[in-house]
Image (cartoon, rainbow, N blue to C red; front, side, top):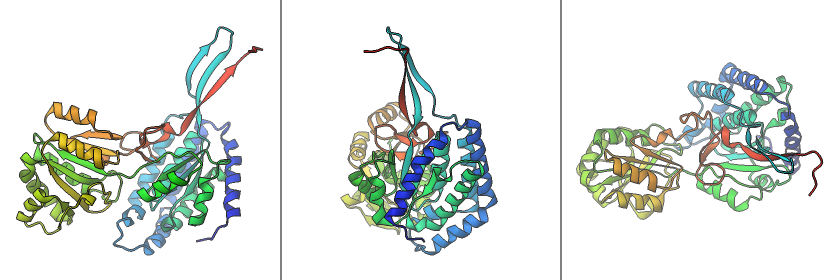
Length: 420
């Protein structure tokens, strides 16, 4: 890994500002061609990508739950290539006429969508983000500055090399996409680069997001940590509920849309936990249980069991770990979610339409579910193509932060000599 200086990163900032000009006359067909070329390169050099990724994996503790986020496979690379092509087929979100008005004095006032400009993204562990962000920024006419984690340096460096080769071969400025140094001492340089960077998007742990929010001078759009709940109502189909909860926890526990806490109505707690038991015991899911659920699991002979403290609720586990709490009714479940949720994704499993409606209208989250796994909170799954992250805030973007939100507005005023 190269050690970079403050002077180096300032040069990268300067180059990003120059690269903005490259997008001025870039057509949708040219963008699509570039992204198609990038997808081809991902497939063509998949073996080399895996070799670089293995260098990163070799440095990580195999027991670290983040290793799944870091790992690339042939299947995951193919998935990245497909997602790049999906982004290429999406409508260009820039240049859209949002409104038009002709004033009494003859002035024509138009509002159009335009690219944000230079987008800085700070993220951890996941090299797929490198491709997702780059493809979204290219399609939306944005320059991007990528600051990945040191644990994925080799993977990210090779992927950015492929991206820059694609840009160069297309006659474009390779500095449209740049990988910034990982030295922590240089992070503040990015957060303070108000003359070069238009927006910062942090994607990662609560600590990372808090640090960016508290120290940035550049405007920030948060893509927050996921503390996701599933409430099993007393009217739920318990077999379906067990499958939904198991999928939300087990299918890929290291991602932000995975389940962290199960809330179950007291009336069905014993029956539901008995149905959930075989799914969890097979994967050795560690459970932090409140007193009622602890006794039920203890009687079932569940081995991976700990008594829950208050601190075990509101935790994003990112591993085969979750908490369980027995509640009296839907109101206690919603109160618990309001207290501990990160406002990412929340689910109710129920057969009662009134309870479903009450839950979905009352719970404050970017995505609310009825009778489906929270694992669907994803730009690709929502039909948006790739995503930069899941925004848990309410300004500008909420939920999957995808192509359509990588724009802002610009007013065009056309006159023929009017003065005020």
